[in-house]
Length: 167
Length: 403
Image (cartoon, one colour):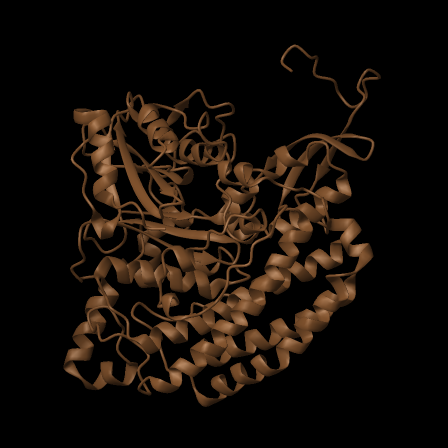
């Protein structure tokens, strides 16, 4: 364990992708960089299949919504190289009106439910996903509840008006 | 598959039976639904339906200050809630660069390992019930009761513990708590030994579990498995060793691994982990002897709620109390991922902070959710009774699955 450090990961990534990935940062020691939806599949494949890096473990996929940004929807991948014990975080920002990104299920079977969950809450379309339907919410739901514009409670509720509480 | 006609149950051409296993079925131990196509007693295919107890924790967390998120984490894996609580506290401490004293780390280790034992007790006990041996379960439940009594002494609660605070604990362990931990360390090993004698070499149990739902390490990694079920396949990945938190690097313990990844191996791995947990608790108690007494939280008045009597009598404490409760504390604008080894795998917290009162985004990497997705694909071709014990040995907790 610990044969690889973040510097080496950055080196092999920049020599392979150059300008196609952003300048990496290291919040709390976890290597973080951004790329685009066109490149994400290639980046993930490279990280997974490169003989030295071997990021063979997909820890997590999740989404994030920044309504004020031009590219408002973010997809966040956490990968883990178990042999080298190094983690990496990749972020991809896409258009909020048309959030489409290639699926990672072709690389990891485990991405299936993670992407379904992300679709369920953020409405991100993972192109090529075998079964992209809602997973935790009810099928009849029309909104993507983790987007910032949706309030925690239903604003149409009549039993929680301010005047009931003297406000 | 697409060209096949969809047949209703009454259609004479249909050869399989559609069986709804769950959502409330005594053999599934939680709210799990699987719609299975059965050919006699054998499963042809299955679809898992989850989300029955989804409570939108991630959305709620975006509206709550950090210390109010702890009770949400309780309700994920409620078989080992202290690990969730402390995992969350450590995430916030990482974000705020809080260094906890060694004594706090060791106290946390004791509670987390007790929680791991109680989690594994449930899983292995239930596995016995599902294979037809009820007595082991009843025998172990009494021991879980003793663990809950220790929690009760430390934090006042038993199941949803809400244990500790950001920076440490809300109060020091009292002498009764230490006495109960020591008593547990003394009384529990012979009982666990007896439990192992009952099962480990039991021919009925071995024939029932050995070779059932065997998983290759490559497949397990491909499905992002973690925890005891991954280690049962032979991959020695444990967050406690790979990225030690809460001073786990100070302890001497082994990571038990299996070879075939079947139900029997998972059972053995969990049993062995309980022995290792007992070793860790014993070491932690020894290390506590050398630490200065009376330290149970880090010195961070900006984040650690002051004692109530000080709030009413001391100006500074009142100000801090007000600021903490109203969320007027400066926090760094950054993101952090912290993982702990939960009862059934890598429990991760991905926290994006914008400096506000509550997290901008909080995502829980829930091991049950990720481990469970292989259940329906791997059930194809299995006998129904094998699928039931497979589910028990995956130790999927509905609260964590649905968050």
